[in-house]
Image 1: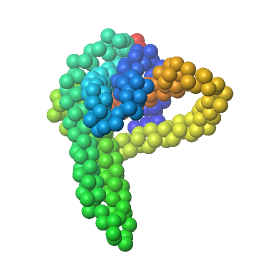
Image 2 (image 1 turned 30 degrees about the vertical axis):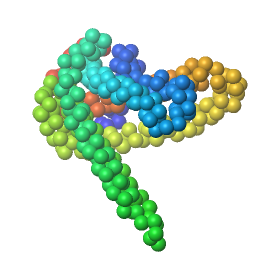
Image 3 (image 1 turned 90 degrees about the vertical axis):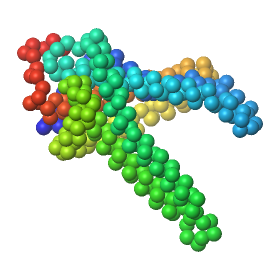
Image 4 (image 1 turned 60 degrees about the vertical axis):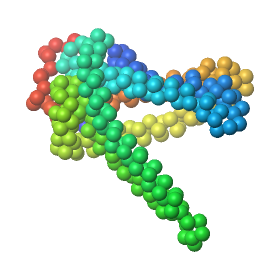
Length: 300
């Protein structure tokens, strides 16, 4: 497999207008924008005036309830957007037109994808619960009168939990690559899709590692570019802006905040398209003997 070829092919898809629509859907659905609207200046003032635990709970309870609802809704829409991207990128590889309507066709597999995502999230949630249990147990056993550092055991436990969580997240993310594409592209059942994803991870582990390393290298490169170019520009903007410009319109309409948010939004959209495309193209190569060949004419 030409791993870098997957990326060069995917770079050409990053400016496809239809892919941008569904990438925007995913980005907005996972961005927790509701927090910006809910934790506004009025909420902050209410919290500053709260003097008892009950008053704080009264202020925060409805906000957290709304955030949970928005999180569930965002999870559903992000799953649908991911399915649409996979379907459309597969259509492009089949040399068929990628349209908004064809993206909606992926909605027929939304239930299966939601189930798969929930199944793969469960191990991560289990690690979080165990982490809190272990940390609570470590805190309960701390002896402040001991001559040894009472926090050394706690620090070691935290580092171990972080390492375990990292490995579990890597494995579940890798399994989702094959499972989601098996459902969308090959229309397999949930059980067969999960079984195939495990088989692909075991047999194509080298490809997973190489693609992951390339993603890591690109992330590092983007970080260097931002550190060398983006941060100085932002610093120049802040230093040259008047105090009135920095405070005008509040947080949501502040021009600098709007610019930074827009740049972050576009960056997330491009990264979403790139990641989805690379893994979809890799899946097509892994399953080339099971998938139909592309059409002769390019309608994309």
